[in-house]
Structures are given as structure tokens and as C-alpha cells.
Image 1 (spheres, rainbow, N blue to C red):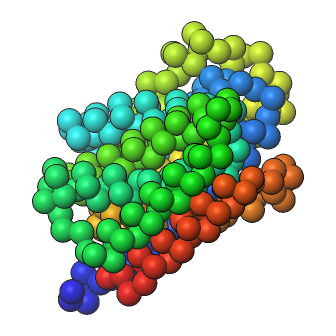
Image 2 (spheres, helix red, strand yellow; image 1 turned 30 degrees about the vertical axis):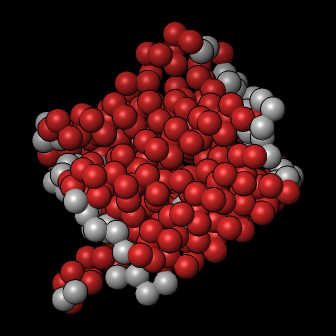
Length: 282
């Protein structure tokens, strides 16, 4: 790997880590308000779309991001919308720790999809980390069997698959813009949220909270998209789940949410897998 390639990799890794840290606060915003899932989806999406659009205008990239997104950008937007609806809803049924830790399945899915779709090689270390992360998720989900939390766990699993697919799309089509698809993803959900929810009955203070959620999500979406262009899919997914040790800590500090034993054990396996996989990554 030459110096320029290494520099691009390092920039991409930093961007993905920033995205992971930002994403780790999603559960706090969703569970910290009385508003239902569709209401959260509406206001988060509205503010995220508006803020991201303003950002592209200030950068002079509005045309590139929206008119230049192509079929790959449309695919990211549609798939992302399906995943986001599941992601927000999952927090209402299961713990923040479970949702964040179940993201650990994304490396396995991303690596397999990248190998199958674009022929991207996966190193033995990365694959071993993926398998370890998958085992950790299995332990976590086992703690929700027979409970309503299982529904939330499955929704989180769907979001993890969606995120893996988006990463692979960006690796195959690196010229796909990040902001345009993110905005369209949010906009696509607005009519459904208005129909199935009641967003205009949400208290004003909660609207302010959800506007902050939209801001942070806009930052996370753009940095993830830009970072995924520079880092192999499996490693991008592994870096992304660095949010796993952060989200449960935030949930404990802010919401006094304590993970159960399977979540604690599975989370330990996930964290070990991430550290092992990223060691000496290039």
C-alpha cells in the first residue's frame, strides 16, 4: 500500500469512526422522548434532510449530490429508508445495548456481500472477526427469546443487513454521492410517518430534541458514506460497530438502562472481535 492509498485509508477510517460515535447516540434520542416511532422518524428525517441539503448548498455540491446520484444513489436511498424505519422502531421494543450490539452482524454480511457482488477479498483476520461478532450477536439475541424484545432484536438485525448492503454499494460505485441519497432516504419516509403516526401532536420540547437528532444523524450519514468509499467493506462495518461499547454506556448513564447477562456476555465477544479484526488493519 503506497503513501497516498494509506492516507486515503486513514481519512476513511477516521470518518467512519466519527459516524460510529454519532450513531451511538440514536437510542438516547429515540427512547428519551415520549413520541412514538413514526413521530421520531418524521421529525428526525425532516431536520436531517433539511440540514444536509443546506450543507450541500454551502459546499456548492447540490447538483452533484442530487442530480448526480444515479441508480446506485437511488438504491441507497430506498434501502436506507427501509432500514431506518426498522432501526428507530427497534429501540421502542428492546434495549439500546441490544440494538447497538446486533450491528455486529454487519461485518459478516458486508464481507460476504462484497465477496459475492464485487469480488472483494476478505482477509482471514477480518473474517475471523466477523465470525466472532456473529457469535456475540447470537448470544445477545438468545436473551430475548420468548419476549417482545425479540421483535426489536430482529428489526435491529434487519438494519444491520441494510447497513452492510449500503457499504457494499458505495464500494462498488464509489462515485455515488453521500448527501443526496441520505436526504432522499429521509424524505421517502415522511409521507408514511405522517400517515401512520401523528407527528404534529408531538410536544414542542420534544421537537427540539428530535431536531438535534436530525443534525447528528445528518453528520453520521455523510461521514459514513464518505468513509466507506475509502475503506474495504468488511473493515468499514467493523469500524462502524465501534459504537457498540459506547451506546450501552450512554444508555446506562442517561437512562439507567442495565443490559442483561446475555447482552453483557455477547457484547464482550463483539468487542473482542472488533479489536482483534482491526489489529494491524491496512
